[in-house]
Image (cartoon, helix red, strand yellow):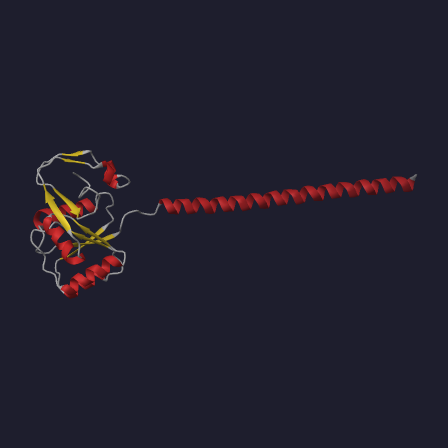
Length: 214
């Protein structure tokens, strides 16, 4: 009887130790899994926050401020508008279009946006500078022209476009067929004529129409 009791006690003790071992192992596994999930969640949140903090605005812009534009009234206003929604944007002005100065602007690896304010006269630019400007655009940089028929002529001369300024006695009405799936579809259907309004159009760009407006 004594031997049987010892055997039973031994078996019970072994069973209890085995249960304790399983409980300890399961607890450690859960803690390890929770730690892994927590670490992965922290990493994901950090990535999302980093994405949300990424600015959608350019940090630097070159803008022409030479004799061919109205520096008294327009240059400062345009610079203010560029920085309106992102005050950290740096506006770098350049006043000369000679080959060396213009090439230094275009070859600046830190700036990828060039703005031309409305011209008051045709800018003097060499064929070398035109070639550099085409290469700058072809490399994926941004060139923004603001202005009037002089800007249209300038773009035609530099890029070989056939843009035309077509002045008519408005009002102009949005052509719904041509503006579909473009940013123009969200504009008003009628453009009132307040002052001289120019609609740029490309010859044979649309079937039966010349531009985004009729």
